[in-house]
Image (cartoon, rainbow, N blue to C red; front, side, top):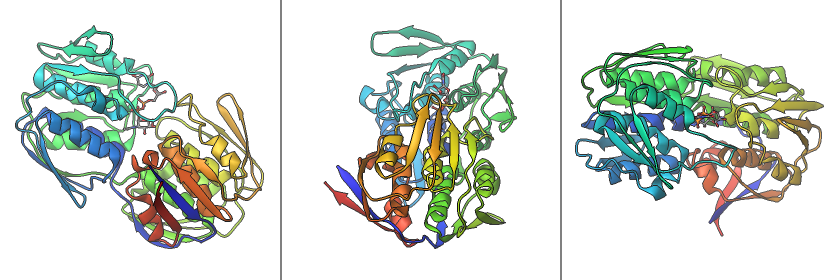
Length: 417
Ligand code: UD1
């Protein structure tokens, strides 16, 4: 077990290069199953979730080498369509393998996927989509067997624009016969990155980034080289870290437009932001103004930034409201923020944040990935020392967050407990 000791009160300044996107890299790694061969994928961050995905692929017969941020992966000799139960349960993204495995092998056995405990995380839309493509599902007590002699293109309407279901269906449909249309598809930048990756492999996918994605099935795909997009959630977290500590930070390797939802809100709060190509410069010396925010599917405010924004708004001059509409259990960080001095009331899906009280150091537990990041942010702005326990949650999405923060002036240490 490891924890962070954060000595607050230092403005974060300097320049930070943002890591590649976890949520783009994970489906891309799953998609390598669609065609055997040697892949070279750049900007793949070293994270627990990525290691688990690589372990699953290795168990299925792939060979991988992840040095610096370049991943070489050989999926020529996959021999199993059975994803081990213990690995499947370690993260939500293991479910991404369902579509590609089905398309390549005609069958796959899956167990319930794991992931952050942030509310109910069903897979019904994934299953509905694959069923529409012709897959059969047999349910056992602890696993599901999924098979299809062939996949046939279909017109699929999602009742909610689920990111994972959109990606799973997209991947499976690349090798289906004929045309698939996904309506009410998720529009996240990671969906566009997956489309770009699949098309480089020889797929015919268009429309990603809009609500309608069309996939014309092809006979075969091939292994390619690719570079993953920057991680907009890590960029957003670092941007807020600079705002909360009164620093001036330059973020490199970002895509401005991916951060629009967050930047609009942060600007409303009075923070100064300058753009230049793929760089953002953020500085804050003024009081933070309160705002009302509703999370929602892209391009709305990202649920993955909700906890970090809450820590930021706890420093504002007034009462802010955050309404969480994507996940039903995503306020687990609130107790720890309160322990550090924040005044927050939860009313159903809404958090009312009474700003104006300064954070003070405390010993707190990270309960999930982004909630854990919020506690680190609060610690950076707090007086005294904050100890954040259970940092394995944070390691799922931030590549050595303490080193990134140290490089811009933070006092944060990883401690073995
Ligand atoms: C992805 C992201 C995660 C982010 C989330 C929402 C990855 C690896 N993870 O997760 O960081 O928080 O998008 O932006 O990309 N739902 C169903 N049935 C389904 C699937 C989803 O009801 O079959 C519901 C979920 O319970 C949840 C909502 O849809 O309430 C959003 O889930 P979804 O968009 O699928 O998120 P993930 O793909 O799991």
